[in-house]
Each structure stands twice: as C-alpha cells, then as structure tokens.
Image (tube, rainbow, N blue to C red; front, side, top):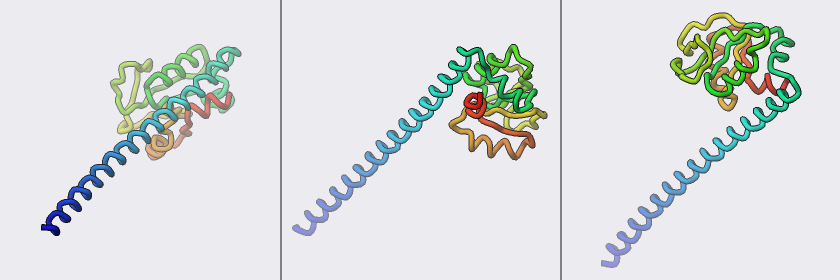
Length: 160
C-alpha cells in the first residue's frame, strides 16, 4: 500500500513537472517572439525616422544610388517600405525595373512587374532588400540567382 501511494505521488509530481516545463517553455518562446517583433519594429522606427530627417533636409535615397552608379534598381519585398522607396525615387533618374516577392500577387505593391524567387530575374544594377530584419536569409537566396549587388534598405538610408 505504501509503495503504491509513493508510486502515485511520484507519477503525479512527474506529470506536474512535465506540464510546468511545457508551460514555461511555451511562455519563454512567446516572450522570445515578442522581443524579436519589438526589435524589428524598433529597427524600422529608427530607419524611418532617419529617412524622414533626410526628407526634411530635401535629401532622398536617389543620392545613394547615383553615388554608387546604380541606375536600374530591383526591389525585394513589396510592402510598405518598398512603396516608400518607390515614392522617394519617383522624380529621380533612378529606374525601378521590377519587384521581387514571395507573394507576387501582393496587392499593395506600386510596381507593375513583380517576380517570385522561383522566376529568372532580369538584369538590374542592384537589388534592394526592404525587409531588413530578414536580409541575411534573403541575401543567401538571391545570391544564387543573380550576379549583381544585393543590398539592404538600411545600407541605402543610413548612407545618405
């Protein structure tokens, strides 16, 4: 009887420990996700704040492309940051030749021609990756497809 009670107690405690571990792990994973999202938003805040400072001093991103000799630009990531870049370059000599996105039907894109990563990508002088939080992984994918430079939007904005 004593052994049976002890076995039941050990089983219950082990079960509770496993449940506790799973709850703590899930909570830690959630906290990690929140921290990553916060860092991403923070990075975009500083990037967009600097971009606005440039606009307030009558500068735009075209300066970077002109200095680097990039005239034909492709943009990876057809969301809000890409649209701001397109707007910033509208009255410049820089031509946005096409966009690239995992979702080529992206409805908010201001570019008519959007390719997927599975497509053969036409020549350009440079590809600008707008989701800077994922630059490294996107860069690895793109470098197997093109021979021209691949840069982050951060490179552009922070260099002006």
